[in-house]
Image (cartoon, rainbow, N blue to C red; front, side):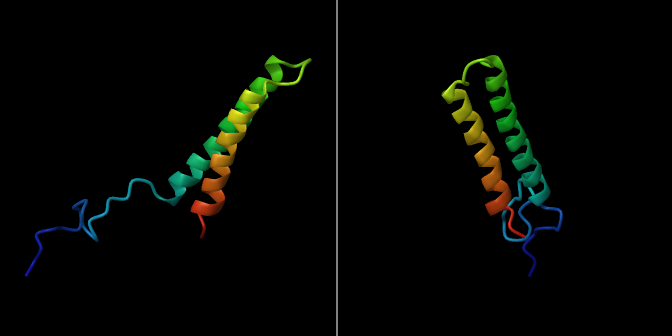
Length: 77
């Protein structure tokens, strides 16, 4: 008759636990984008008269692109 689950039970409603919601993912994406830009800025400022280190630029760009992908493809509304 009843399954023994209550509405406040974590497995209620299909047995899946939702770890992050859309708003949390939005902030994760924005923080990743800001972190990527900050890494690129620090790399630019440390080697200012010369060109910046391509490895630092690549790491910053990857983190930024990760945030952009999360925002634009995983948070479709």
